[in-house]
Image (cartoon, rainbow, N blue to C red):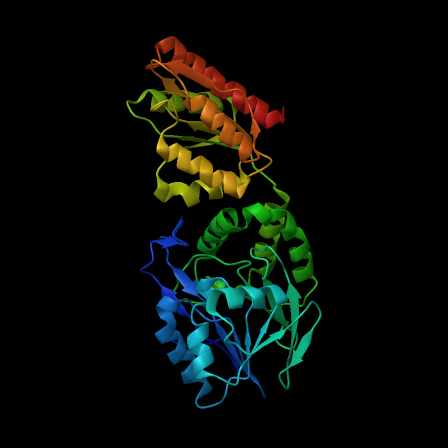
Length: 393
């Protein structure tokens, strides 16, 4: 349903609580919202559209607010299909609308849907008058696509931020002060870690830009709207972008017959004795996004797998492939596990840890099931690893 945000600004997006994975990768247990906003002035302007799966509801919302008025402009802050999937249908319904987009976005738009749109290229500093209000455009390339930009309305002091500051979070309320804001922070961290982490060095400059603007709202394309906790989410983005960490180590493993699991439990005892916080995960793909969210602010990670067919278990291989793409640099990491008549897992894991950009430390492996003395050594290994991580050695 349509929701009124200010006298002339409406939320016309749609919620998707059926989708289990976003981009067929990230588990989204709280669902995902496709946020689109419609502002009525002398000119009517729409900010982004919605995924094709909710196109019917989205178009009904737009038509319900326009009430026969023509749509003058559509701002395309980002061409990814969850924001642009309804564009062809909208272009057909509103043939006179001009689509405002970056040059990179225009190229991507043609690749996705063909040369069927009436586009106008906007650059940094360009403005468009709506009547009583103006819009100003600021590209933020690679946060997280080359086409990405944000749009600012100075008269309303609202930033339409595309994916930045978003969360995979469906809620019956739209504003941060109407819902459990800690859920928003939790989902915002997970969103940042799993989507924006490879580009986090670009984030501080974007936050600096946002802080220079008088703001009453940040309207992202996913999740709830920030209006009472704007400084809080900007401070978190600054911290995440700078790679700031807390004294925490993650232990992530999979096991076949319990040997690697026993080593993991021994290692966390050692880490706890050293004094660092530790979080243990037996890896499942459904936990992938949560693990990476914790890794964003952790100082180190131990990754364990037994040898299977001369290599690591496929589950851990998938996890390390995922980390390779996210590039969680600034972390210390090591591999551990068990092997039988031949090894292989440790070598493969260490190669992928290096490829992920993390700093590789020596690992610990034992043959067959660990003996009591080897478990004591695993505990000491956990202690020593935590010492190195804590002291930055």
